[in-house]
Length: 273
Length: 266
Image (cartoon, rainbow over all chains, first blue to last red; front, side, top):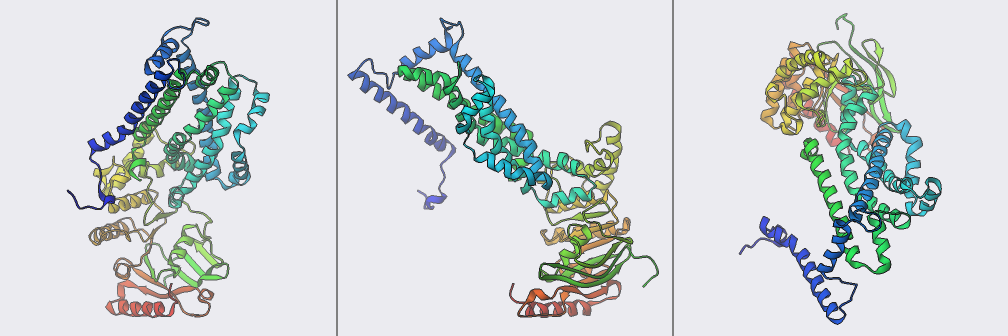
């Protein structure tokens, strides 16, 4: 038995893995137990469906073509949602990189744009969703615009801050090496801001999902958010629960992939922290 | 004083921030090829002096000439700099860190060289990496280098531009004593070989005496205990070091101790 203080005692790798998995296992068993209890009282209970029911419902959505349209609804929903999310995030990231860098690097660009970006970032995006529907119609564009408007200002402000945080010594050094403003931006600032952009995108993905689901819930004809809000009318927890789990898994995988991509592309970025 | 035109000529130069006077009445001439070391207590304005040469600070009064022209208002390739840290680019390999100085000059839009132009430039880069003893590390990144090697890289980076003056702002302050000795040898070798003009700020008096051909002490000549910001520092000792001995070091040390005692606790 060790006599270390509690703050110095660390679990071994195996123990840490077990402890990490434990809450998930417990949730699983608590759910199953609750589901069994309720179904003993009422075999038609909808609130906590058994895993077999969830399996049947998902089999129908994911593996059987829809009787009405001939599409595999689950995969169609996933495809539509991921397309909207990636286009929206892509546009927001491009805006964040270009504007964040320009505002952070050039005081003459920052002076007029910085207060405007701050003001825009304070508008609750959901409050202007009706305006987006009026301006861009009920199609794809308004859903993508909601993600862009919700995420881009955060990214711009964050990247502007990251640009300003780079040591001033590097800017001075580049100038003594003969760099002009453009060269400082493309060879000193841009390459050092790119890994920070990927970090910022990872952090704002949760926000992007929020706006995506909201837009799909209000006006859409497919998508993961649309399906969840559609089947809510029938209290179809056997569809809602797996859809939520699926969205969580997708979010986790995107985050992990972006992290690995960043580590692969910019090893020096992780070494310096 | 020789008739040769001075490279740097300061006449009654002063620097103040609002009501705080940092430097006052700086009068000096420096010829090409001198190795000037700048010493003084912290906050004495020696770094401010270096920043005026560098172009990140401007004099508030007086005339400061560089090769007969007023000092530039921003840093430029005729004045190289090595800081204590953050001098090298973390996202570039050792070779690219040195190459980038040539790329800035030869590729205005992309800031990058390709093919034959790159090969020619790399030959030049490798010469400077050899001069500072970094040939074997050419493909490593700065985070893989020791502090001393990073400073070697920063020196090579600056020298490939063949600057008129090399400015060093406490370049070895963060290094171990042994490594520091190696860096001193390297710097003296480069200074002789390439006939550099060097300004080096240091807080280590012995280092200043050992390296320089000329040592400046920045200190206040007037003190106001009620309002310490009213008077700035100036160059109180300007020692040609070839002819000085141990007694000067002792004199400077006791003078600095005296002004530390007079200055209000910082």
